[in-house]
Length: 415
Image (cartoon, rainbow, N blue to C red; front, side):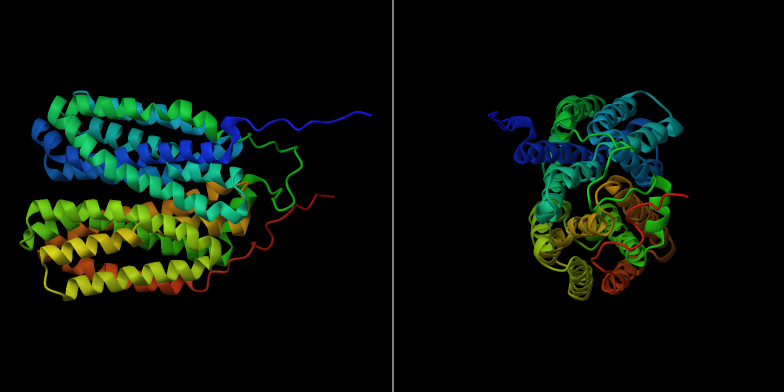
């Protein structure tokens, strides 16, 4: 009688090792991108540029990141996440090195805006979450998404002082090269997140679709809950980008010292580690649309109270901490809903489309913040716009249905 023996699980295929590798990639990819504000003064002073030139490069970066994300996700779905993450790390590093080279403003926008934007899209927590969606069971999927998002926030908290230390010790050009070397750490780590390329002839799992890619995208865009979810995520990007770019000068102009203003922003990143993780845990146990509605409403209430109370150092720090808890906590339930609606076969592409909406919101948050400030001499109009959009986003997410999308199952063979 023959006997069969199960093969021991490889260390590198264990879920814990996969999550650790993905978290390191998320921390590096998002953390370095979040440190770019440190380069504003040294770069503009070196070249004699105005702030608008550097700001436009960052705005282009956000937009390119958003536009490239669905494409990067689709490539990860088709060819496997490891290849896309490794290629993205190389592009990201090349963009950082190109930023350090002598250049004019258009070339800087090409390197810092386009090249780095593509690199972030292909080496970021969005692709990591696509890998997690295939490696982690549905009962822990939102939790894993929360871990990946928390790691990105922790990277923001860690790389800000590291980037500043590099600039102080070696100058901004060498600092960019050193950060590029950090990004290349993601190349070997990407192999741990290897997922098999899509095989159009393979028999999919019971819950997965057999629709061709563009037909799947078309049906997703016709699904009401997906459209509502995508629309709500625009508000997330609008508020985050506006605060990251314009809250420090708002506080300083309001009489808050620069150290307290920077500490308030740092608290956002620190408390977001907790907020993102808790959102992932709660999204595994409770209604994801209701969690999103509460997060957006909470942002609106927190911002409303902050604007109505006298502006002080204490109120700034408390607001930074509260917003940190709600900062990227929208990501785990949002990504979880995409997986529930459409399965994991096209997770990278379909979450990428949602994230594109986020980045379009980011572009408008940065742009309108500066434009309306120039018109009115105050950030007030955009702050109140942000409050209104938060409550609108809360209402938009309430009708979202946490169910598999109809007409997204097996393709009907042509007769």
